[in-house]
Length: 453
Image 1 (spheres, rainbow, N blue to C red):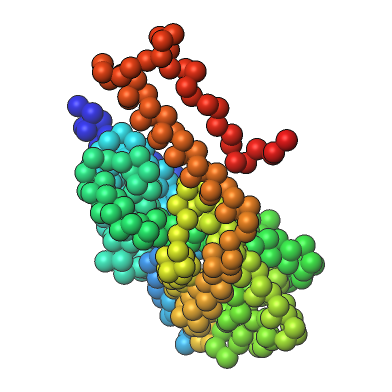
Image 2: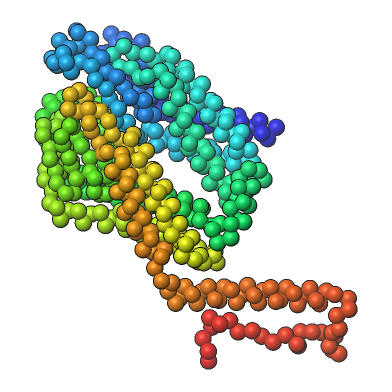
């Protein structure tokens, strides 16, 4: 009964994740549809648009094919009537990933995480199939295979990550425990995998926070340009609301661009353009208000910002090293090098995936190349985080750290000595003192960390 309940709850979690994502899109679209068209609105087109945007928000590229009547109404060139949008608005994808991780963690604590992950992913797959088959549009469409597979893949990654993190610490009595025991049998190399993953998670979180802070700083300093672009679009309140909601959906994507800028490679806003600390080269960019945050020019001295990702790696290395000392597992140089390399490699892998999702096409012609180049972005960020982590993990051990290690070892030895002594007391052939007690034979021991009077 418990396993059935876990499967049902996991399926409900997946259904809620999908429903919330669809509702977040459908609710404002319904309001805008009503305000724009009133009672004469074509309500039959509302669900296909919602479903298509939901698929686009999970990474499926969106193909735009404008009809002849729309080309005449909008006034665009015929060669710009067909193009692809492939820069993913990451807000919806991040929500699904985090919600799935929460579901996977709960299934792991219930003791049936494989069943929970399978049930949740299968439910998301069924929902994705239904949405894909019922939300086809001629003017805006996604590849059917990607529209079906990407939402459950995102959910699967989140659920597995949350579940494995929970059972690695608490145990599951199954596969993960066997892997954990195997890793523990490696001796000094046993803590390396967990420490590398923990350090990479800290480094990614730190650089994301720094990227978000830089976006907030640019919004504060260049807010006037954003407002000017809003005014230049000459849209009414309804149009401004649509533009604002779209930009909010792209906020995590912009943070990825900011992290790429901080790492050094920067990003592009069209073919032949570059926005990086070493310099900014922009031609004519679209009049999207969010692009008002782009710096007009930069100096070569701005390359000093790469110290921020290095600092994020150093922070991750400090946290990992502190935890190793606290756990009483001091490692040699080689395992520490492996941990630093693992932190850098895992961070680079996350940056590569984020770079792929945050880059691509945002329009026809020269706008087919936008966002960071995934490979340079991943290499630069990985190397910088590696440098920072190595500085903290491989630096000479402080005397306070060595003293703490000696104290912990002394206390462990004394605890073991007391246990052996107590075991001897329990033996029937153990002779006590004439007073019938052995307490007088045990001298008080001084903690080496206590000051000497």
